[in-house]
Image (cartoon, rainbow over all chains, first blue to last red):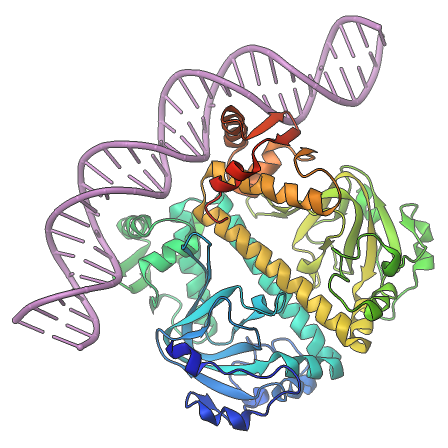
Length: 260
Length: 260
DNA sequence: CGGGGATTTGACACATATCAAGAGCGGTGG
DNA sequence: CCACCGCTCTTGATATGTGTCAAATCCCCG
């Protein structure tokens, strides 16, 4: 297991300082300053009073590089920290007991993962990099300490978790109500917005995940994804050549999604 | 809107004491003591050190009775409090913009709702009573104050939200991977466990929701639910007469669910 | 240049949605 | 107490969307 060597474990109490993280080459021991980070508008500090953003800085004890195909954590790993992505593209998933994998999201820069582990102290799902990236490591013990001292930060953590709950409810609604083409359209629009929010083109982008990943995320098979892409292309809504996607007609694409 | 009159609104800061809640007949102004509550093993204090359970008591400012068909809150209502159910059976749902309703859960005694409102300060979904019940009202401002003083309580809130995230991931996996009979079997087993945890029979119970509600929750039509129930009955796994359900063969029912 | 995984496309099977009709149950009012 | 009415539930016939199986192509990577 190469991931074992790459995983950073913090003793939960007292918290080990990150200088000891030098044992692993993928951990950068330099603290990052949120107030100077270009992602502060989407990441944990999102919406916090500017004066309180500094409260987050003390929580971040390291940055961790993740190469494509590498796991940030897997189901069953002990929960030690939350991770805020600085760059890269990722896939979060849960294993179902019969060996299947259910993709639960495609987090990218500015998003935070690891919340699933708080409840049981163990991660119930995993996160793998679809592209090289970097994450800020926020040891949970540090976060607890900082939140106890900063009401603004404490509230921010609640908001972050609440938004994750709402996001998943939207996914449930998608899986429960929409058909394949609508699901795919919703997915493409979701991606488009996420790219746009990060300064990339909202219409032309490159998929980092396979058809199989998309299918799992949307609750259909990879063949259905492939066919749905072809149909959208025939209708002139998009251009899709392998993983290169161009949205040609946003308005009509949006009209495919009953919930918009 | 009768629900407007029944809704208790707390000013977010400073927090109005609940004695003013006497204007509404459905609010009981007597504080409740968690340490004496029979539901403490499933409710918010679940798993907390006994010494810290008292920290929760200060948060609860009222109890609220809800009659069948009445809404605890609706989508769009301002978020003011979390609610812990002391009794009753409920249905949580989100409205999809095209007028549909997606049922997201069937919370009952010992469960907590309202977490969806923290993120935006407004509820994104609603909760309606399927049967008369009572809820402990935990104004969010109180909860914040108490959590700032009690690390154990702060952690407990995180755990509660994390578990909700994991629960929804399980629902996503169900909607994404399982077929109608398996979904229904999983639903019946989930209900069975919830009833058993509350001291009711794990094998004989009464459904409080319609076939339509179940169908929405499981992402299929009410006809499919009806047929699936008939099939399970033909196979001798259950007895279903209207809303009266008896689980005859738990083992075989469980084998229908690929994830168990 | 070769090979393996990813993608596309087709044919077919099957599960579920849709449309429709009728029965059963429960609440209400005479 | 009974009759009625509305809602829920069941069941059937049919349509349709998606899954499954299979084969061919394409692309990327070594």
